[in-house]
Amino acid sequence: MYQSVRLFSLFTAFGVVAFIIFIIMLLNFKDNFTIFEFIKLCLSSISGAGLFFLLVGQTPLFPLLCRLPIVRKVFPPIDGKWTAVLESNWDKIREMKGIPEGVGNSRVEGEVRIVSRLLFVRINFKSTTKYSRSKTVCVSVSRDEQDSTVQLNYIYENDTDDPESTDSSRHNGAGRVTISDDPGGVTMEGTYWTDRKWNEGMNTAGKVSFFRKKP
Image (cartoon, rainbow, N blue to C red):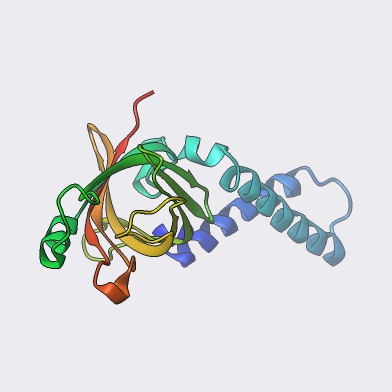
């Protein structure tokens, strides 16, 4: 998830942590200080900083830190369970193709599980009817340089065990949503599109909204 901040900022934070560890070790150093000891302290400081980032950034501690007021401005707290609502252009496609009403749905709801860490984000989706399920193959988090809004961008693979005649057993899709951290909570909203039966002109697109799932 480091894409939400500039890589330079990540390296700067790593350097600051390594420097703090170096100073602490230096203050407790009682032997004769030689160039070899200096190199040893530097390597130990870098290793310590790496271990710190590993323990904090790549474990369940990270989403907990993201809830803090200062941290969440850089890393929005998106880890956890969500309810997703997808509203597509299927009704328009059905009308143009002459497909009877009741075949397929333009509105789909499901449960989303997001796992966010400092260096990766994973998203899994399962429809409420258990008709289909999706998992991401590529996810990035970016920040707009002009208005500082944060976008979640993802490519996913969808599987359907028993597809309708207008559907396919597997297709790919992509989405881009804006993460909003308002007083009422974090929400995500944007658009998505698929390559579902694209050779027959049935690939869908539409609006997708994520709402924090209530316990």
